[in-house]
Length: 377
Ligand code: COS
Image 1 (cartoon, rainbow, N blue to C red):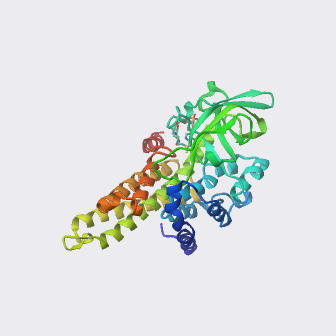
Image 2: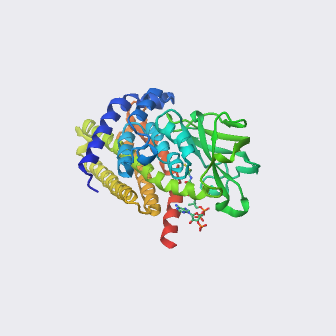
Image 3: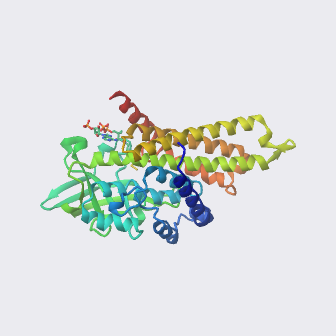
C-alpha cells in the first residue's frame, strides 16, 4: 500500500517524537522496569491514546492505518512504550468505545485517553490461555450485584491499573455465550493484583495477576450485555492483532537497521562483513520478509478502516509478522556475532522483546486455527 501524503507526514512526526522523547529512555526503561510517568503523560498529550477511538467518543478517529504507522515507528525504538499505547487503543479502549454506556465512557474511556487513569483487559487465567472459553472466574448474581471470584494471569499493566475489564462466567451451561465482561475498580473490597512478574523482555510494561476474592460489583458495571463477553473479546482481539503485527514490523525494522549498520562497520578477513555474499543473502531474505509483512499489515489496516471484516486477515498479519520478527531479530543478532550476545548493543534487547510476539494476543498456533476456521466455515 502506498501511503498518502498525510500518512507520511504523520509517520515523520511520530518518528521525530520517538527519536526525541522515547529513544533516549529505551535502555533505561528496559533495565529498570520503570516506565516514566512523564513519558506516559507526553503520549497522552500527543493523542497517542485515542487513535482508533471515534471522534464522537473523544478519540481522534484516525483509524488503523495511522495506528499501525504509530506502532511501527514507536516499536522501532521502544517496545515497552508500544504496550502502553495499545491498551487504550485496542484491548481496553475498543470494548469501552463499542459496548460502554455513556456513563462508562465518561468514567473510564475519557480519563484513559487523557492519561488520568490506566485500565486493562483481563481474559487469560492460569488454566485458560489459548482455550479462553474454559475460564474458571465466576460472577454470581446477588440482587442488583454480582459476586466475582477467580484469578486472571499475565495481565498487562495490572500492577498499575486503576480499573480492569474482567471476563467471567455468568452461566456455565451456555458455553461461550455465558461469559460476561465487568468493569472492576481497584479499591473494591476483594480486588488485588499479584506480584510484578520478572520477564524476558518488554520489561517496562508491568505484568501481574488480578485476584478476585468475593468482589461485589453493581450490575451497572457490566460492559455490554450479560453473555456478550466472549464475542466482545474475540472481536477486540481481531483489531488488537493487526496492531501487534505492526509492533512486530517495527521490531523487525529496528533489527534490520542494526544489522545493516553493523555489517558495514565490522571488518573481518580484511573487509566489512557486508561484502560477503553469505551475509548479503541473509540481509536480502530479512528485507524481503519485512516488506511482505508490511504489505499484509497495511492492506489489513486499510480493510479495517473501510469497515470490512478482518478476522482472517488480522490473524494472518499477526502470525506472519510475529514469526518474521523473531526470525529477523535472530538473524540480526547472528550477524553481530559475540557482540550481539552482549548487552552493549541494542540487538540484544530487540531479540528479547521479539520473543513474546508469537505468544501474546493469541499464539501463532491459535492464529493458524483462526485462519483455518475462516477458510473452512
Ligand atoms: N468474530 C466474531 N465471532 C467470533 C470470532 C470473531 N473473531 N471468534 C469466534 N467467534 C464466535 C464463533 O463464530 C462462535 O459463534 P457460534 O457459537 O455462533 O458458532 C463463538 O464465537 C465461539 O467461537 P469458537 O467456537 O471458535 O470458540 P472456541 O472456544 O473454539 O475458541 C479460539 C476459539 C481458539 C479462536 C479462541 O479461544 C481464541 O482466540 N483463543 C486465544 C485467546 C487469546 O488470544 N488470548 C490472548 C490473551 S488476550 S491478550
